[in-house]
Image 1 (cartoon, rainbow, N blue to C red):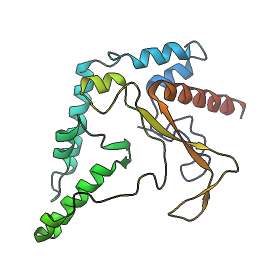
Image 2: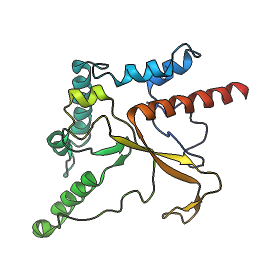
Image 3: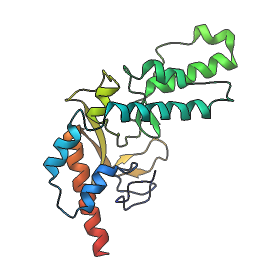
Length: 209
């Protein structure tokens, strides 16, 4: 996989928005030079049968096998957590940032391995600050949610995106530098429209350059 081809700026610079692995369905629409109507695209991608059950399960099995292979010689494993919770918990916000539940489980397993006698005393309500450093979440296709029986995904489910805010600045808690972004929450349909518009604008700029 590659980074979204229409993301103009490097990952360590601003503005930032839709920093993610590219979506081939969006790219095909962008490369059609306007032949694809965005509303038709949204309707198509929202279809619960857009991806077949066979396709979704095949990719899920492949992903789990990759994790199993990667942790084969590790003393601390996590693949079982994914398999046991895939339907009820969103374990990742996007491809490189985990949700708090998964981070906490990894911490518990690490503590249990290093200090077995402390394992029973590990608090189950440990808190991790959420959204200290906001970033764009990756949406879940409705067809994927259907075939994997994801109970935490609904039509009204919203995803956070990080957007450029001009002169309105926050302070990055890790670098203590000013950062110029804010957070918006979008439904799957709204997200697709914004992502499409973003890529179309970026493509136009690239063509001018």
